Length: 117
Image (cartoon, rainbow, N blue to C red):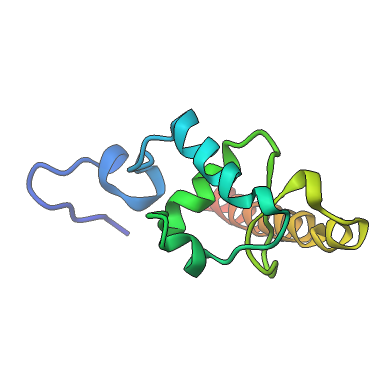
């Protein structure tokens, strides 16, 4: 299989898998989100859009918040970790399950790739 690129495009920079984040994560932006979440409740992405956050930016802010902002697949939204209950924390096991599933898929791809070498 070959990849056909647009004129001037490069594999490393233009395929979605290798594209660098399009937004700059700043301490100010993380702090703004932390202030909003300071009421201790869950806030949906839809609610946070009112403050100018995009879905992608929220995911990147969570990833770069050093564990201060809590969210996981299937969660009601975003919440400060300091306010997370034991029950809410136990539900984030979906992150571990998702990671394990992704590693299994990668292993299958890797085995298949090595068969073709």
